Length: 380
Image 1 (tube, helix red, strand yellow):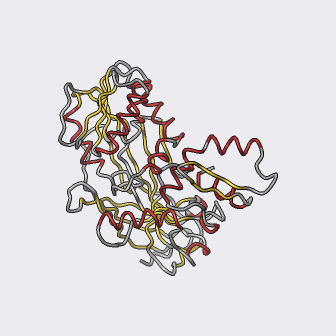
Image 2 (cartoon, rainbow, N blue to C red):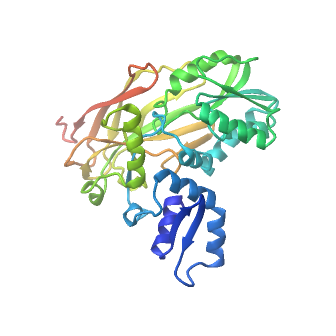
Image 3 (tube, rainbow, N blue to C red):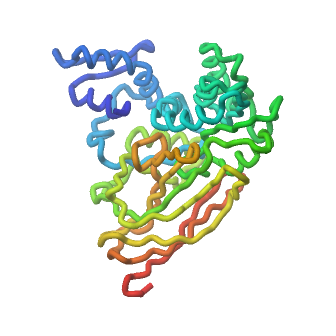
């Protein structure tokens, strides 16, 4: 159960949660707080306080998560510097993501020199590498604030002899020695959106000739979707996504059309076969710009609203994070195309051209989908 869902369940039971003098307080009707619930509140105290401080509220509105299965709109976050304590908490505590990284790390880093690109406030991947008996870990962080947080964390855990933190831009810093392995988590809901292709291409100068990348590959798939009517009739950001949307607009300096993600997206909304949207193979130099064709075959009669694009992250060969299988810190991305949607029939084919091209900063890509529908009658 996520933090939002947990707090919403408390609210539905009549339990009020707030912060007072940096302490978590609660008030509940008589008999509602069981010993198990009290224990869970204590165990989750830190995440709840972090969450409430970040959203600047002492309650979760009823409409925020009244139906946990209902689709929620979120802005794509990875390409913007809006990460805070709460978002880092979500990343650090994504158990399935962590387990997949650990499988690759445990297999590949023993007795090796590792460079961690963008280690973050908790230096979580650097810590995994140290625990997996890496000989030395160089962890690079561009944000001074999160560098200091990571340093405090590493010192507290007694890992400063294993992990050396470096403050700076990973594309500009140098290491005292070449690394055997590069580990990073600079992929977004679309793998390359944070600039992974450019950054990891550059990181090869920090690696030995036979150096290994974790993750090994980032693949995004694309399929046609028909979304639920109740969602399309009232698409909006609820309070928490709206909070981060405002932070993005403040950082950029003006509002603009955001790239949209879908939380609680169901695979049952997919109405076609899938094709490749983006494929970044980190085993070699990655082309940061691309354009390729694909075909999607409609599998059932229905309404075409747009396309969903989702991440398959290969931390190593044979170990894949598919964000449609479980809910991860990455969300599927929605490309709205038709409103109202158009009717399609089983057997129709959508011919698409998927393109990625770098924006003015020569780091983050923009994306474009072009296409046409070939009806099963042959009419285009």
